[in-house]
Image 1: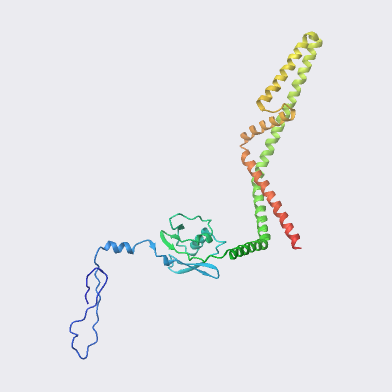
Image 2 (image 1 turned 180 degrees about the horizontal axis):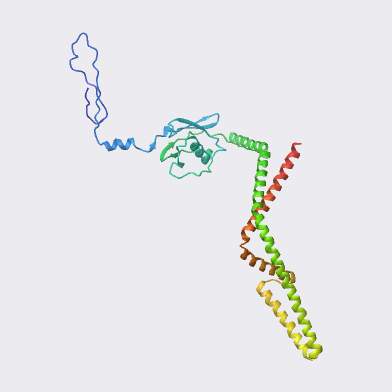
Length: 330
């Protein structure tokens, strides 16, 4: 047997074996060997053998009992595997995670549109299966063709949407109490964790508040003492040293100076000069000064208190919902 060269380098023609004409009783055919010779550029064949694009029939999508079945070959085990997809519940991210869980050899997996745009992991599989897409697994690209669904009539579509809504409400009603129990347990754990973080901060805050309160009260008593000294001095100067005719203009200017001090306080602080406002402002001044010295993080403390208040309010609402659900069941 010999190879006839022509426009198709891989095509071989089988010729007759010499010495077989005119025999009445032909002998059994001799064993023949097919010799194939590569013709042309060898790099062309190597590029075809080592391409990374896998044919589209490697991944198939079929529908069974209304659910899509995605069949593909696992890269590590070289086995065909079927994945059942729930279009309204499954997402692209959960599908890719199922692939990696089934085959530990899958290091990277992503899904792209036909024009090369990556599809977000939060996209529902129902939306993905509407058009063809590309599945990239470990730098190998699979072109996936989605079967086209028949368009339903408007009445049938409305019935399907109503059915979906009814199923969703039934699922919520049946699993609401279980979900609320889990949420209650999660909130209780979160509240315990926040209280554990707040406990050392609360102790440090109590010490700083006590120190600031002492200093503020001392400052108020010092102000009272100064006013008492001022009144005593004015009385002594009026009745024992000078007369009222001399001290009257002095008291007038002292009163006017106090009014100027109060007005300056309003310009600086934008607050009325009241004793409660002055005390609160001075207390905060001493508190923040002592906090810096004790390395007390006021911002972190306020954030933890806000988180604790939100978690407590959420727990109250969950407990209220559970009580209402229990009453409804009874």
